[in-house]
Length: 108
Image 1 (cartoon, rainbow, N blue to C red):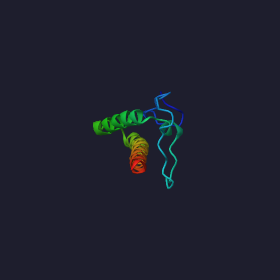
Image 2: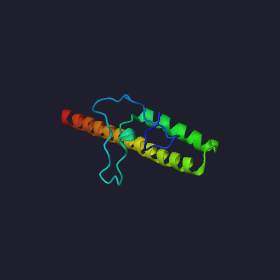
Image 3: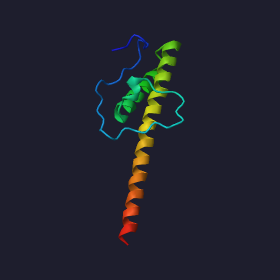
Image 4: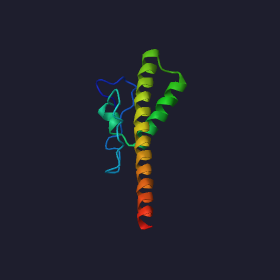
């Protein structure tokens, strides 16, 4: 299924992609371009799966130049979304470790 603005071969977002409430990644403050809503709403797993498909299609070399450019641009957006999730996960882990250290220090 494609949208009116999307190239014919553009991958679409998984509608209703599962996400865990309260675990959305934090978008970096200096993020120069906002992601389109269909990408910004993707779970990590959905974005990663779509990125794998984009790479597969690009590596097949079967599309024309315009199609390849559109796929590459989509892949860049998907990679940014995955990185946002990973950065958010890293931040949550660092916060949990810091909280644990504070608890351990308070018990002494």
